[in-house]
Image 1 (tube, rainbow, N blue to C red):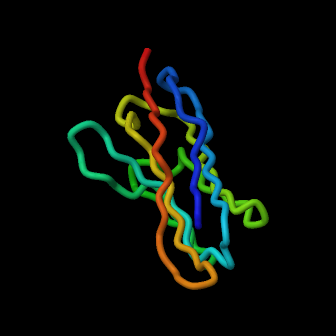
Image 2: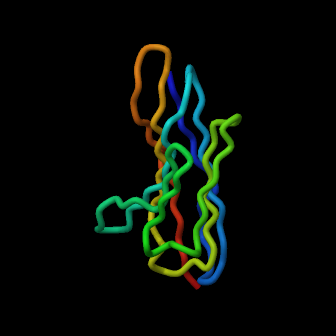
Length: 118
């Protein structure tokens, strides 16, 4: 069984920074995909950043401000968010694509609220 746990959300002022973390645990044999998505109020879930086979990808709205990084040994993905603005307010979800002993699949974190407000 696989568990995915996020941490690091909260309230931050415009221009501030936050770092999100997301760790996967369980009977994982390998991870092939890690990403961050977000869903603002009344909006569809959208890709923020992801990494797959050494290639990273960012939404245009966060390029130059957000950085995705990974610690494969810890099965953890991070999202460093700088120069935050109100449009970044959303619930952030991490996503893993991975293999266990008997299947492959994608797994979501529980979501963490990020609120940018003065």
